[in-house]
Every structure is written in C-alpha cells, then in structure tokens.
Length: 131
Image (cartoon, rainbow, N blue to C red; front, top):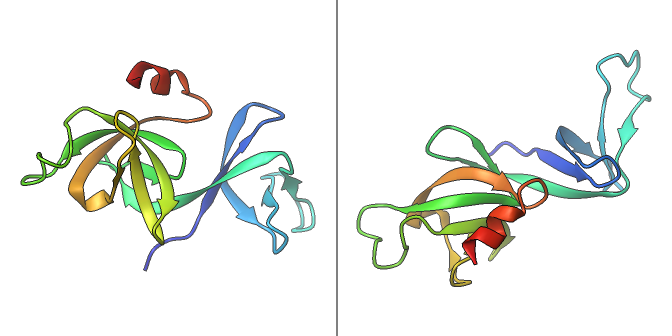
C-alpha cells in the first residue's frame, strides 16, 4: 500500500515543511513538537502542496511532486530516455510522471531510475542549467 504524505513550500518563510497534514478544507498543517493538544496547529495558508509519489530514488530518497531529478534509463529504454537529462516530478495521467526538462516529454517512472537533485522552489537554478 502506498504511503500518503505531503510536504509544503511555505512561501512566506521560504522553507520546505515536511510531514504536513491536510485539513478537509485543503489547508496544510503540522503539529508543533511543543504542542500539548491537537488544537494547536501550525497552518500554512500561503503554500504549495506536494504529494509523495510513493517512489524512492536510486539512493533511497523519497520522491515528491516538485522534485527535480536526474534521469538514468533502465536497461532497454535508452532509446526513450537520454541519460543525464533532468526532469520535474508531476502528477498526470492519474499517476506520478516525470516531465523531461530538456525536451518536454512526459515519462512514466518505470522507464528510468532517478536521483533527486533538488526541488523547484529551493533549487530553481537547476532548471535554468538544464535549458
């Protein structure tokens, strides 16, 4: 069973918040470690939600929506995937996909292995380097 979890980019504080929950209204929150009851939430109303893909990169790092990855084709898929290209993890076609930043094509995760090298909020310069 795939684990459902989120992280959020808090644009007010320019920081990534991991292990965020989502209220029924869609607002991300965390429970502070010093909190004495569950009614003391830290809310992130000005943020960008990113869901865990259920996948890990070749080094065991969890892959989230919004991650920037280096692409390494699996055996037999070198004609589809260029080794060393970068991609952005997105949701599409009802699943997690990788949008290749070099040619714009959408890849399904089984075509390749990946290394997480950053994310679109903290490491946007990696996208400029790919162009």
